Image (tube, rainbow, N blue to C red):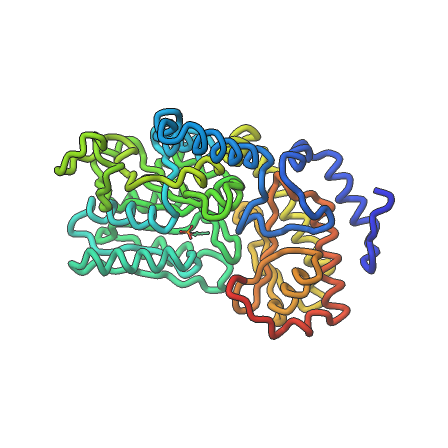
Length: 430
Ligand SMILES: *Cc1c(COP(=O)(O)O)cnc(C)c1O
């Protein structure tokens, strides 16, 4: 690794350890499958917006120039109409589902709404939706909206985490009772990276006669989801994070095969009709996962997402998880060694089984530190109020030496007080 500028972070032994891990990394070659416009920039935000796959550039070029520009409306019969279910089948093995159980369409928020309404309606007389306060706020907002819409005493019970890092496991399990219609959680929590035991919660919900709806936005493409093995009823998740689908790429929705007849999509649009081109005024739902379609799908975004999903499916989620755990373990050790003395505290679980693909650290000046790193063009993490810097490690694009160098740059900013100049920056996206 001659020629690497370690700057004011002369932890050569640590760098050598990281370099040795890179040399042994079977996934290292995948970095070349992505566009890297600034080679020196350490991008640690792939859990918010994954990097651009080179294959997506070609796909978008083809969709725009050939499929739209040349083939025009004929393209609907040449791969567009089936794209949401084709991408769903491509993604199915990544989340442990079977073909026909996954569709890629709409946003995570919209899919969550559709599936939560369908689930609660399938449990008439039950009034409780259980979630926690580590969930992504859109989930809490959507669930509250679902309760409001359905009325009849339906309410959301939000179980608080004691430390803001770990899921409130015992407290949540204790809330699940015979009035519970639905338990809905994020498999990996967006702020702390806490990873729920999907099997444990799902079994408890089923034992009480309730359904589960997992939001896998922060796990899909990074942590195995195993929907089938755990007999999960319903799930949703983003494709623009660890699946590298592109900004605002359509999300996925999973409905276990045996529930597809029973559940009804509350947004009855023409794409979910059994025969959309009959233009029948009476709504007859499609069978299978297609009944969860709503309206015309954004083909440019959908087909851009295919490349990233295909790549993760090809690599395999178990190999990805193995590297992810190794990356976060190296980072946690570096936080203890180099950042804790500078006032940082680990804000993620220490147990790798309970941790997803990102590591959060808290610091009273987290905002200024994040801005200094981004403005200086050194590291791109993100900030989550009030005091968390999130460091996202994408197994296909992040190396062990990236992690090591990033910690050095973070330490350097704080030691040089360079974050103080950025404490008052004001931005809409943090
Ligand atoms: C990123 C994320 C979302 C975002 O939902 P959108 O509808 O795509 O904006 C939702 N839930 C979780 C858990 C997330 O991590």
